[in-house]
Length: 133
Image (cartoon, rainbow, N blue to C red):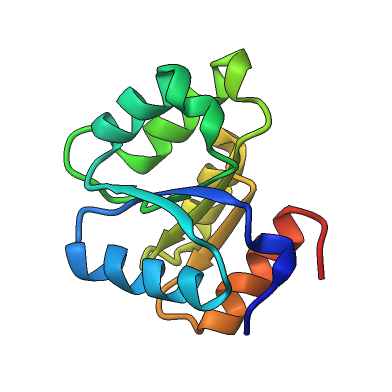
């Protein structure tokens, strides 16, 4: 499933479940993506993103339900920072209710993927976010 077009993407995974972070990392690695950082909550993600490191990332894979700051609050914070305008945000969550999807989009998320999903579906959605097939 490797895609040369994704090899240089830099991704930050934000999920409070270590097993889910590992699964996402494995899925991304299987597509040839190697530049992956991960944190367990939105506060740690915001520390990375609001520093000069934030400019290093192309994509934020973000759970909605997190301890402390929610995923939606992180989306709002990212979208309020003009230096992070180019950062794509993909919500990856078990929260599939339509009102949650609508809220994520209103906050500025670029996409929303409901767990469980396949490697192929994840890469397909990421490709769509970056205008690739």
